[in-house]
Length: 72
Image (cartoon, rainbow, N blue to C red):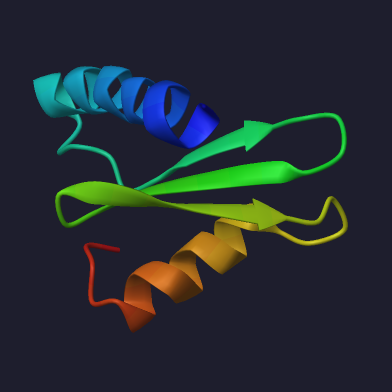
């Protein structure tokens, strides 16, 4: 359910705000109780990646966007 409904809506809302005057969005980080969830717009959809709390989701997002040749 999260992948089909919640994540696309979160990305759409963040993109609408980002597109106003902040040059769009690169990714969204959600902090759940047991993990971070990293949402990255990709193609016609998105990537959703679970990140352990001990890891840095911003560093991981940077590595992924670089590897996929997305905007930094």
